[in-house]
Length: 258
Length: 88
Image 1: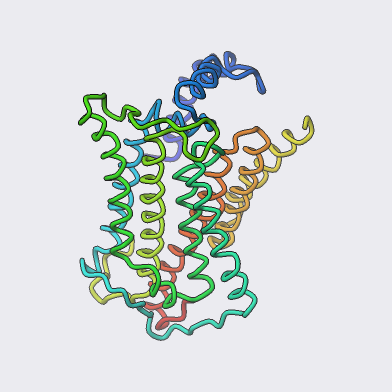
Image 2: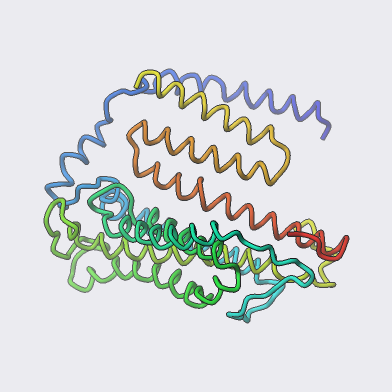
């Protein structure tokens, strides 16, 4: 296909899409317009019905909990796929020892970096835990808190070096966190069915509005998401870092483009 | 407030364009991180703290770090083939 033909095709496609785009953009609500009806309805219903102050968490874990379950498994599938791809050449067995690329110099870290990482790392982990625990009260939740926890472990890598990081972070623990978090979420869906309620119905006591314990079942689902996200992201980093450690094998001549 | 949001949109556009215009991959990663932080501020200004927190964690830290590590992996591979492991 010549560049000319491609440009013609692109032009034709754009011309076809243009009327639709113009129509949609013309009918968009004005910038800064008042909250849509759905948002107002949520704001009115959720504090009374679920005792939750953070509407976003209430939507994610309760009103549209099934969607979040789907996202949870998308994350699980994406991370499993990446890990399978990256481990493909190395094989199934994982070590807890740090590997090194032969011939690579170990760069010295300045003491300022080590000190900063040792000070900020634990504080960042604490902040991540705070975000996770306060999912139903303040902005944030399992996903955000999980990513913050994962980046907290990465500060340990930055400060202590790869070998020190691998002494703390065990690969099979991360597997268990990732899978266990998703399992916990599914369990939160299935367990209410044992009592005769619907899938993922909020059967636990709802707690008090604006308290740490509020939202009932949402808190457990939230913990599951936090576990899965923290384990998944750290696992991803670990597998990518492991990829930089091994010297390229002789049999991978044809895999450069992959 | 009326100046802040157009200004933030402008910075978003500039930092987004910068990612495309910068050609060196390792600099590009830092441009992505900068764009993530700009987006975080924009979302905060538009009163979406949940989205801002996600953007900060994913766009400002996780994605750039992942790209950095992936780039390191690519360079370790090529350096090993060419000159015997000179990559950092």
